[in-house]
Image 1 (cartoon, rainbow, N blue to C red):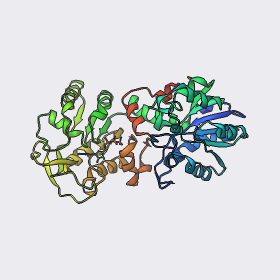
Image 2: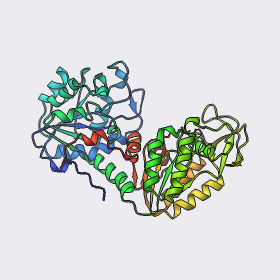
Image 3: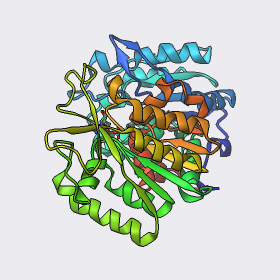
Length: 403
Ligand code: ATP
């Protein structure tokens, strides 16, 4: 078991104390309405535990990327409403452009044990993303204990995820953070073997560290999606007009050598579904043809893995005991090019293995296909799970006190 040597909410006695709880309430919104409340639901166990123990729970989070400070479309007000419904108790929204200004301080001062207050979007303060002390100190000034449960933001060193911990006497991680790290950590550090990692998505450059680290940890590394073409190029294949990053061809070559040296299997597409142009709009009509990976015509672009590749990848996955997956196998936004991603998801749903999905597009694909409850764990944080898979320590976790 991967051990997280950090204080947890179970190690705290919060009765009568003001607990600042950093959550990830960065939910998708349309016209002021929350379109998916998964992240709010994922935060409930920690909130409920702290409230049940008689804590005065001051919730905070960022939402989106407000560039010019406070703006109504980035307000967390709708989250307070949804949270009240889910918790079955009122959550006071502390509307306050300074986040910790007079209004927020008054709301906190009026709290009783077991009450909940939600602060305004932490990014309304320009110091937040720069981790500037003034805002960290403001946050610290209204609490006795700090708990970080925002896994989706744990890879960022911001005031509310990292800076504040320095100015609060006691700090801990929440249940969601613990769960994410337990599943991702065990999968990578102590996997039941064979351990197969699948990487996809558009760009190799985004995942350099992940490729290298996973190659060391896994038995087989499967590469699909747009990033596969830079690998195919490194093997000397003609890739037509497929997405290739010329600056990373050398790196991909090194990874192919590294795999050979370590005796690891590195599987690339054997065939591809290609088109003469990227569909525009992305989900618009597209005419496709299948080519062997070493015979892509000069005027074609690979946009999904082909049927032979689906067969090879599926066979490899069927004998796996641990699978970590990040990134789609093709342009899954288009129904004609979603087959590779769908088939991989279907196999993962079927096999008897620990299956961990690393956030973002792959998580969305698995959920929209209705396989969510067939997976061992779907991470709530795309960027954070990637950095974790790279083997990096997450600043939001590092800042919390050790046990
Ligand atoms: P995750 O969100 O699971 O971490 P990701 O978001 O990091 O994955 P990205 O690098 O953002 O993955 O890539 C996802 C995008 O890659 C999708 O929009 C998809 O359309 C695109 N994509 C996949 N395969 C190809 C391809 N062959 N050519 C061009 N784009 C591709």
